[in-house]
Image (cartoon, rainbow, N blue to C red; front, side, top):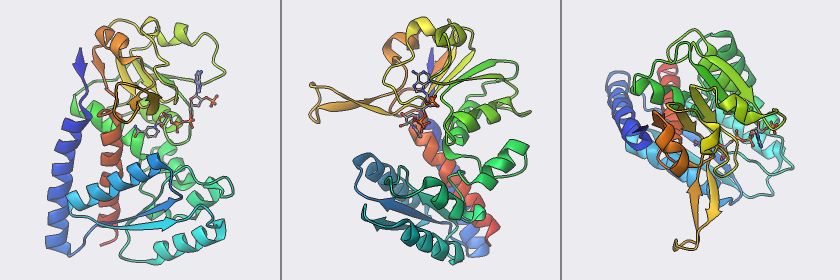
Length: 291
Ligand code: NDP
């Protein structure tokens, strides 16, 4: 069993991004710049955005963090996005989800200039991806592809079972794993909460990609010997042995599943750091387009 090490792979990719950024600055006088919008004080969102801003600094990108109270209106957010769309300094715009109930995710995402949609959530971006046209790829699925590529895992002909069908992870993941590319060329099955006898399906999988949001949901009896398991889930559970009283676990019962796998991502330090790499690679590409 080999651990797919998100920290090591992301360090490698970040050093490449850093070099390319220095070159872009020296040759074209352009510094990639990411704008992040954070609404409210959700601790997980605060942590994710803080991480993204710190990574910008590490890579030599500029960054702008726009914070709003929970009470911000949809119209105010749309106005801010309009300003960012028109600001030549800004290459990428990300809106940290979830947004408060009174704000429509769709309205906000649809307002982002697709040329600055570095999270890859805009319908034009996803439409292009679906049609195989050049586009930003949604950050988490992109990060997973970068991980598979880094370890030279040839996915052609494999049966890939994706559990979860969200617009930001599960659904784009199925598109990318089934396209005629490497990584890709897999035969893909998409599962969700209405899937009957999920375990019978996952047991036939050469690759399982779990994006469910349920702690340790994928158990050893659901996984065949030698499978590759990619765990997207980030779930906080109580843990009295920790100072904080809690810890993070994935959607996979790691301790019992790992011994059966050929490769597996841990949580944390698996897909999480790769998602940031996907976002940063998209921002660099956007900056190159904005020279
Ligand atoms: P969503 O809640 O949007 O989607 C979850 C999916 O899981 C849904 O399609 C749902 O099915 C399915 N599901 C729920 N229960 C079951 C079940 N019992 N059996 C089968 N399928 C089920 O979540 P996201 O896709 O946004 O995120 C998934 C997880 O990944 C979360 O833990 C999130 O925190 C994490 N995440 C991690 C990232 C990273 O960088 N590592 C980035 C993004 C997310 P249905 O559609 O039928 O409701």
